[in-house]
Amino acid sequence: MCKISIQGLTHIYNYGQPGERVALQEINGEISPGELLAIIGPNGSGKSTLARHINALLLPTCGSVTVDGLNTADPASRWEIRRRVGMVLQNPDNQLVASVVEEEVAFGPENLGLPPEEVRQRVDRALSVAGLVEQRLRPPHLLSGGQKQRLAIAGALAMKPSCLVLDEPTAMLDPAGRREVMQTLLNLNRQDGLTIILVTHFMEEAVLADRIWVLSGGRLVMDGTPAQVFRCREALQKIGLALPGPAELAWRLRNCGWPIPDGIYRLEELVTCLVDLLTRNRSGGSS
Amino acid sequence: MILVEHLTHIYAPGTPLALTSLEDVSLHIEEGEFVVLAGATGSGKSTLVQHFNGLLLPTAGRVLVGGRDTRDKKVRRDLWRTVGLLFQNPEQQLFEESVFAEVAFACRNLGLDEKTVAVRACRALEMVGLEPDRYRALSPFALSRGQQQLVALAGLLAYQPPVLVLDEPTSGLDPAAREHIWQLLKKLQQAGHTVVVITHHMEDAARFAGRVVVLHRGKIYRQGTPRQVFSDPGGLRAVGLDVPMPCELMYCLQQKGLPVKSGIITLDEAELELKNLAMG
Ligand SMILES: Nc1ncnc2c1ncn2[C@@H]1O[C@H](COP(=O)(O)OP(=O)(O)OP(=O)(O)O)[C@@H](O)[C@H]1O
Ligand SMILES: Nc1ncnc2c1ncn2[C@@H]1O[C@H](COP(=O)(O)OP(=O)(O)OP(=O)(O)O)[C@@H](O)[C@H]1O
Ligand SMILES: [Mg+2]
Ligand SMILES: [Mg+2]
Image (cartoon, rainbow over all chains, first blue to last red; front, side, top):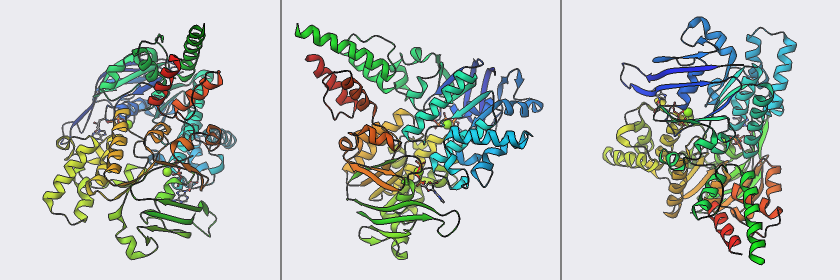
């Protein structure tokens, strides 16, 4: 369980210095325990900046972020916050510390002071969930881009956090890997109650979340269910986002007068709806 | 333009960490082609393209660029003028203190005068969709990841090498920027550039590639036009890939007994086919 509360969060890089840049402005919101929240937004809108605030990698210029009531600005809470909130960074290279994949994954659990057999179990499980068993004895810095991304996920999972923040974890994965990772995240969320915050440019992934935050220019401009957010095609396009493919096709057909109901965002939904429409149409036409 | 003959690459050969990343790969990329390289994580895509500009050398076999063998040191020294390579990680590419210096870097190495360099650098920033005045003085390290990717790409576009080899150039881009970059690459190809792009986005491969080459565990698994390659969903899934969503949609409808045409791979084609179907 993990409850995150963000109040009046503003982040200014290089505050009061040359190169000052406002990256987040007055963000307010709460993330409930067990929730799967997707954060989407154009390049430079502040997604990574926001993600880093949640486990105290960055501290607010103004406002506050709390995790289960612990304030990220309080140095005494920082260790506990990082134990509860796992983080998969956007650039997986930055996270590497060990010389063998296995050790890399064991690093966190060992630092928690867990007994060796527990560490072993966690490492094996995390590697298998992340699909890296074959690479377990390779040096991490010599992995391919996608393999590094999987490694970062394994490392975070081995910590058994109660909340996981992932910054574009599937950006460099092949389609099968993307599907597997999303399925893993959904299982962890639905079965183990893990709170998940997922930053992504894949609208198909955002659709799977309970709720979506849309950032633009450092502000939280939309907060709603996938259905609520993806109803706003024009507003999303205006800031450089798009509808998931199936929703886009549904919109186009609807726009040509097809009686396609609202709320079609996934492939299966579109298939059901089209089969229904087209078979009715054909049997109607042939009689 | 690029001729790959029986290329095998082994990382750290003769050590316990030896790893064969490419095995007997032969491939011919013609001048002016638009080739998309796809394949599962670790299949050898990045390793292959790093042979195109001589960054990696064959363990066996050879690579010829414009007829010149990359194993020849003299050839290699000037290869960057012909083949511009964008790395998978922008961090690997960026090292200057300002966006402008970054984008101007290769142009300066070409020996162009400062005025031409400035014009080219600004134009390249505009091409990728970054306003020069807003970005030129910033440090590349104070940018978001997607912005860094665009700056690294601008650095290539500024010096306009005839062959553009891009390793996942859109992996961190928002949907609008992603579309913009693919359109831009298409335009560059039409203007005569040879374009080789690695991507995991099957929808984009379907729309923009002239030829798709699929790697699987260091070997060429399949190649052909997007329509040919995407005609075998089972085969692609077996190697970690997938067909584009519109393609998948059509297969699903077919399975439900609807008489949809096969060979549909883009959203526009799917829209048209559905309308035809509805007309009866
Ligand atoms: N270290 C830094 N110093 C100064 N400015 C920064 C720094 N890091 C990011 N910025 C700026 O803050 C803004 C938000 O950056 P952030 O990385 O949070 O964006 P993002 O939404 O994650 O983008 P992307 O989709 O490209 O990853 C950008 O305008 C960026 O230029
Ligand atoms: N510098 C290196 N030293 C040793 N092995 C390496 C090195 N770089 C890559 N490898 C290994 O070679 C294989 C091919 O890697 P490559 O980076 O070419 O894959 P890729 O197809 O680009 O994958 P991705 O889609 O994940 O980027 C992988 O098994 C990888 O672990
Ligand atoms: Mg980011
Ligand atoms: Mg790669």
